[in-house]
Length: 219
Image (cartoon, rainbow, N blue to C red; front, side, top):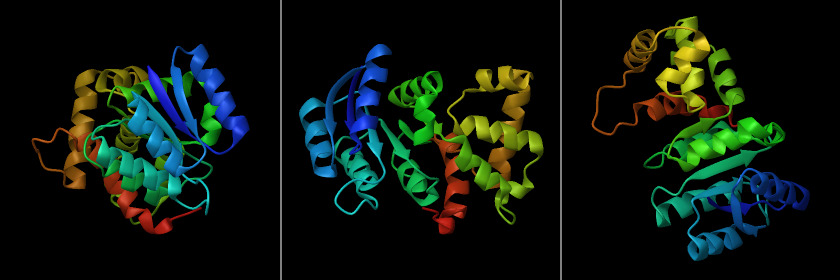
């Protein structure tokens, strides 16, 4: 599986190359700025990309902007964004793009190799990988639609946001698949997510909370 990385921290980018190589990935390019990343994506057409939210020259949002542009140029391009802190607005923007294959993780997740590699594979396969810390902040907020969810529904939502399917959620919570299906139906109903043909209600469920929390910003 071919990977393009956008990360200006040499130690982290080198570590990612080593980690991914051992996991069977092929890192075809490493860029240290947004322009270099976009050029690498156009040249190599990778299977998945890893992008730091903040890149030179301003270290603000160049990385996520480049990721969004790359997905516009190459619809469906899988993108896993890394950030030092929970920045919910950026996560919401990324999730709002068409199709799956998106992820948002804090950088300290990289050291948890198995979980990081699993998240990257989910994103590459068109799934979603959302950092549990983002979900935790949303769940703790008063006045959000999440308040209407039961504790079990919140657990299910958190696992959905991490990219787990119904069977995996059932296994982790030690319940039946039918029970998980019922909980997810309740979550959709409480969020006002009607049945659509898009097939992306799982992503929209997470996006609803991210959008509600967008004003928090948090750098």
